[in-house]
Length: 87
Image (cartoon, rainbow, N blue to C red; front, side, top):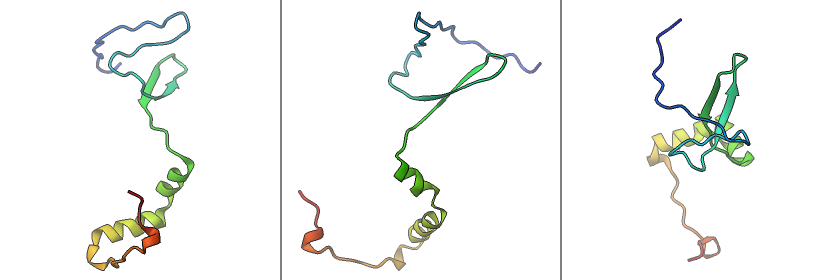
């Protein structure tokens, strides 16, 4: 066995198998349960399919990184009146 872990609290599920984590209200977690019964909760964030495709697009990420690294290469564009954002 490895080093002993320090237990800082004991938690108990309610009749509906729910668990309350004090100080972590309205947060999402990924739950992994090992065959030996160990349950691991990892903080999770939900993203849209579109955002996930954006993050996974390596070519686009390289283009963005290049633009950030060399702002002097950016092309200055002026907005047309029809492109202006509403106030």
